[in-house]
Length: 213
Image (cartoon, rainbow, N blue to C red; front, side):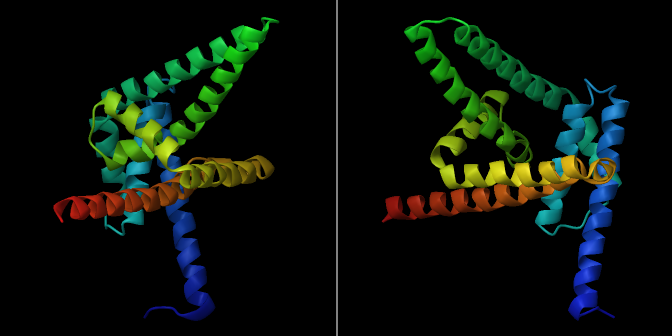
């Protein structure tokens, strides 16, 4: 018998809470299995892949899907993730370097790297949703993330807010971290990303129809 009213709503939210807690434990386990440095990116990709299936209302065995994605994407996701990490380090080092030079031209260059850093941070929020949504080369992933940020400012703002509020909640209530530290942020970011992907596909279809006229 299907529950209705407040009981149905309570059951729905409790079900999501349990699913997210279970997924978060799998995510942490995947990181530990990979000894941290080799496990973070494949575990995060597997987590986003599971959440993507959930948001599309696809039935799946969570553990099996997570394990398969973790193994399948282990090498590529590490290469992808550490490419992002290296790029971030380069931007950060350059920004700090030019900030330390007391000249006008250095200030201008620092401003450029500050803007670049802001774009990088927002693009990073799209990194995993784009990775699990499309099958591309690493270079194409980076290009698509950049294009999405620059061409969808509203969704970019929503992505930042979607990351910030769950993150702020975890900081205020640290006891939630072992159960929702990764999975809740993943869910919010993936929901926003899915809406953006749908919008992109709709615009692409409309453009194709206009060209066909």
